[in-house]
Length: 241
Ligand SMILES: Nc1nc2c(ncn2[C@@H]2O[C@H](COP(=O)(O)OP(=O)(O)O)[C@@H](O)[C@H]2O)c(=O)[nH]1
Ligand SMILES: [Mg+2]
Image (cartoon, rainbow, N blue to C red; front, side, top):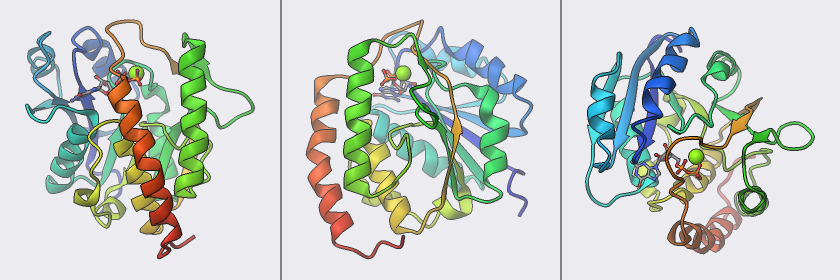
């Protein structure tokens, strides 16, 4: 099947009502043939789901429990795959992932299983409007995830990824336990174990303007606790390089 015949974009949301209308317009303006934009909302109190339902080409998956980026991402990706997606894009709602690079991400699937929108793929960081402490956390996470997964991407923690769906179907998503952002790191290791080839595309990451970050101590601790597990899985072998 043609790789771009059914492109799904999966976006987990929690309190993103102001960001969704400009995001959906920017995705449409990127001129890629998007079959469906799937908003996976965790019963946001600000009414994000109702805003999303009024937007063109959008399907809303409403979840309740347990709340979390990782739980939502897994549910969203699985729905996209069950619905026959040929390519799956994952991105955030807060406009930090620039839809203008969608054509490059999709084009990269001609020669890679996964294309990553990357903050760090040139010298220095492509970030704007981000506090120093967020940059430091991000850089530390980058170093740890590279070490523990063995994936040599410049930006292995980026959630802006574009997958060949046929490849993604070969990854056991139910084996991933993390409910927060650590889902992304676990997925990376499982993808590597399945023999993934990667390609990075520069993405100028803009810190959010509307709404609040959901990064909190529990999410950071979950990620820290995951690292030894990832490392032992990596060292246990069975990983094609
Ligand atoms: N469904 C769902 N989405 C979430 C949750 N936490 C964060 N998100 C979404 O995940 C994306 C990234 O979160 P964000 O707060 O921007 O994280 P940051 O960029 O690390 O500050 C955004 O689209 C959020 O709305 C959650 O618990 N459930
Ligand atoms: Mg964000």
